[in-house]
Image 1: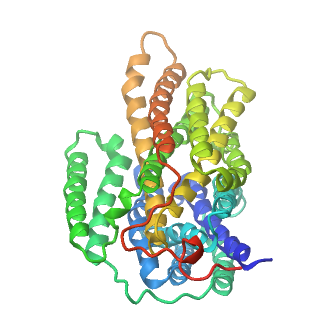
Image 2: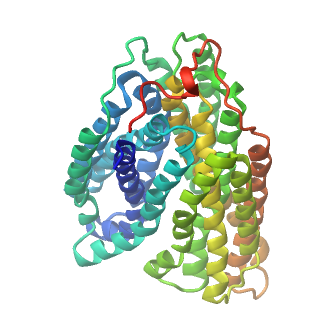
Image 3: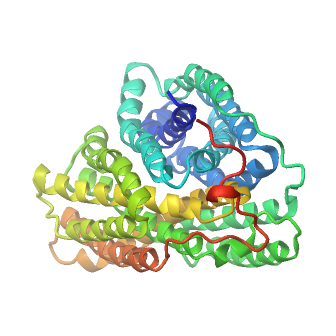
Length: 478
């Protein structure tokens, strides 16, 4: 086997573990709540803390890889993730568990940010899309298997097993990555922008916390408004700091590269639309139709399974014809999938639901690999870590935006539909349909941004293009 495919295997294992851990915990929350005798608001922070820290650390970790080498940051991140998984499994109380999840999220951010960067450096333009598509299979498997594995482990053993199982798997993955990933020279001419990392982390944390908890606190509550104001002020300070920094955390000149900037915009709106569906469908299935959580989780698996089948093919297609067409077709199918969900009756049959979810999954699978390839392939090789971290950051931001938007729409529209003798389940379904309509409109913006991105690779001023047009530093693994 060529070495580059071995490299892909270790990155894909990391993607599988980090994605799996993000989806496996939700099914165990009731058991954690019962074990620690805590309320729902407290136990939710087991999930919220993880998402907030991952979302606020991706950008700094991406840049850190360019300074300290991708391999070193990836291995350290995997070690932190694995050790924190053990402390999660051994947590004596909820405070310990939430703190351990916070540390675990730091390791997960390193895995998520470095994985695509390693792939972009290892595979040339003719294979990058296919490699990212194959890595997307691991992401899809993590999303689809998480609820099922979490339910089995929680029922057969205990909720602690969903964390402790990461220890042996993580150890094997670390050793495999240490053996397979190529040695790199440190970026001696590179420095890490601590000021930019602090400002970006605080600004993004404030934004994601406001989006995550705004519905609970109230969108006009003093705390929500304070967090949004903090994001605006600190975000502006971050931009000013980056413009004056000799080696910024995020080189703002990258946004002059059209495939980069429009590709990121496409990610935000696509994931906002997608996560509106994945966030609201469990409520429709459980509260509208009476399915239990495990049944609802299984009914949602057509989305990631469809993604897993399509992603490698869409990546290969984009390698041959460019990313614009497959990515744009993917977003079109996602929009159609969201619109089709607005016509899903409360008393739907399973085939009615499944074909709609397959349409969503196929669209997501067509979009992700070509779009990621376009973003990562558009920047100079020395900035691929930053591009990878920023890409992951935009995915998380889109997820948070989609959840916040959908929750606000449902809360606003429920009283409108709940009139007279209309059953609660029918009013809920109608409000969710309204949210799907708005999500389709938001997602449709991505059709435009995807089509106008262009396909030509541009370089920053003074960026030297290696002989033969290679886009990554150092020799390719073979």
